[in-house]
Length: 467
Ligand SMILES: CC(C)[C@H](C(=O)O)[C@@H](O)C(=O)O
Ligand code: SF4
Image (cartoon, rainbow, N blue to C red; front, side):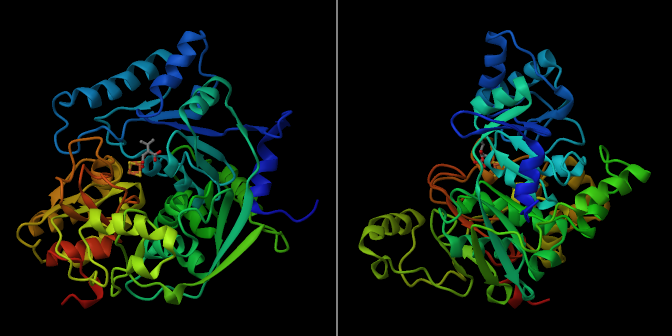
């Protein structure tokens, strides 16, 4: 067998047959279902009188449309209520395992899947959601699919796919103090551009990636999609195995040892060929802040808003439009920009480690007056774990809101939204126009920068805060 990349190994283990048009039929090990992209898929099954082929490999949870402040009554917004109730009806009819809204396990599907041990090395994992790339942090091939594909997977547990090209992003050396996985991810996107990964599955490797904890690896893989790539993945290692050990749905005892043996063999062979290799020096990564309406419009926190006039002619109109929307001028400093809202959460940065990083900065301090600051745990489990550590009190005493789990202000599909013109330091992954509410202005940052900004009322560098 010629040397293979991890992607090729997982692909080979799941490829069932090649179709006439050069696509392949892939077996899918895990199908995650949310309320947004599944209604028509279930409807399609119903119309053709089909069933879900493997409910036991499927799990559903509502995350985008759920309110995160009050879960007592029915969901107030009629459109959101309909989405969630439709999912509940569908999972009941099609016998798909479901995590109910009021379960302590409910949360963003990309936080819940790994937590429950449903995400494991070597698996193919799909979900009707682009940030499915998150699960690649475990050495899985995980990617987002469209609604018609959701229907196909529900009906057959297979998916038609074209093989991707492979890209190795090797990140050498160590991140500096104050720079996190989020900053690294934004730096990678800034380097590749939002289309730089198109057609590729990215494997991240190198000393800086190995040094990341699992939460950081998930953050990095989560943002891969913002560089246009199909998926991001990281070879599983001791950290991965230890993280999975003892979780529900993960093999135990001798079976676990056998799984570890198999998982260890997934890493790319030393002489495997990638279609493209990009080398990044982790020492170049500072805390990063986006200034525009695309995740690659990003600069280090001590940088300035670029001048569209310095760019090629064809890019100028778009860059001017970005600055106009964001209410920024060329040459303006990013640090010190006044903000109205801080959002800490999402499938990018809503895990316990993210909340802990923010709490470390917030402890004993107060949110600046006039700033609305939200902490939204990525899952009910994260919320409970944080409460066990007393982090909820750290945030509440500082003046943050402490919420239930969900996508929340990552996107305006629930009551947590920006008002027009409001500026937000957000730990989420997209800064598109209107993403957090019509007319809202999003700056993507790490949990540490978001926390420091909440205290300062301005985009602030956590390294400069008084301790
Ligand atoms: C609503 C959903 C389909 C969408 C996605 O695919 O990513 C959302 O999660 C997002 O982050 O924009
Ligand atoms: S938290 Fe944001 S990025 Fe993640 S699934 Fe929800 S809406 Fe999409």
